[in-house]
Image 1 (cartoon, rainbow, N blue to C red):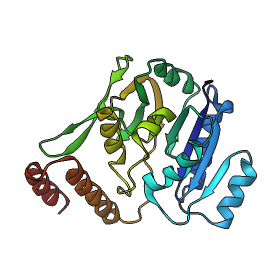
Image 2 (cartoon, rainbow, N blue to C red; image 1 turned 120 degrees about the vertical axis):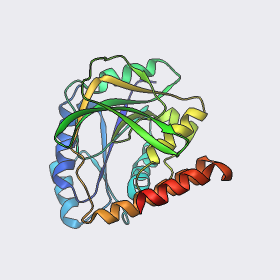
Image 3 (cartoon, rainbow, N blue to C red; image 1 turned 60 degrees about the horizontal axis):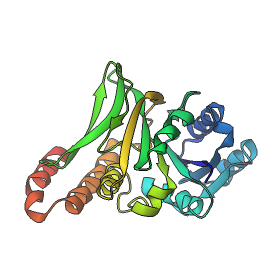
Image 4 (tube, rainbow, N blue to C red; image 1 turned 90 degrees about the vertical axis):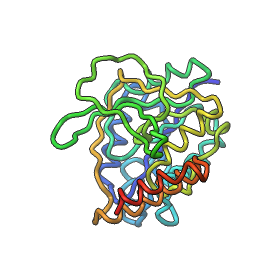
Length: 260
């Protein structure tokens, strides 16, 4: 089957970011050959009109309500899986890609065991430029830990336990094998959960540091406590899903102390 990519951008009150992300994708290599979907978790008549007028070729999906990250993306993924698409890009609206993007990521799928590929992420932490790579789970505390470095020297692909879904390319064969994103996570840890599930089914996950994107990490929360409550619920679900009752004790104590 000929390679054909669909890209899903999940919008939530970030009209300008979503339009900017879409434009950057179209300017990238193979960007004009991609089929685009915008899932709007905060739909209004005005935003729908803007999207359809500025990019009439893009499939616009108005969510019935804010379904969160997994639920929102799944709306588009379900539609895409019915078509002759070979790969699906999940990307946050506050991500900007360069011209060298699709081609190098797609090359990794020549290995049939590879199901997910993600780029390195340039972002700022406390006014310091950092590069976000893959991550591992500290099972003692059930704590996913992303690897961030200041100097991106090596460009060799990294066989990963998990990658962030701020930007990830996933084969449709993987979705058919592993399933959709777990909607039990409204936001946070759904990407870690999906990667771990895929690994259990023999799917290989690659982080490619030779492909670099920029992530602005814009927030959709007016109050920090909103984010903490959602993060806590996701962490709790993650612990209960992946650990036996006896192994949950230490992580549960840890997250209760952490979030309090």
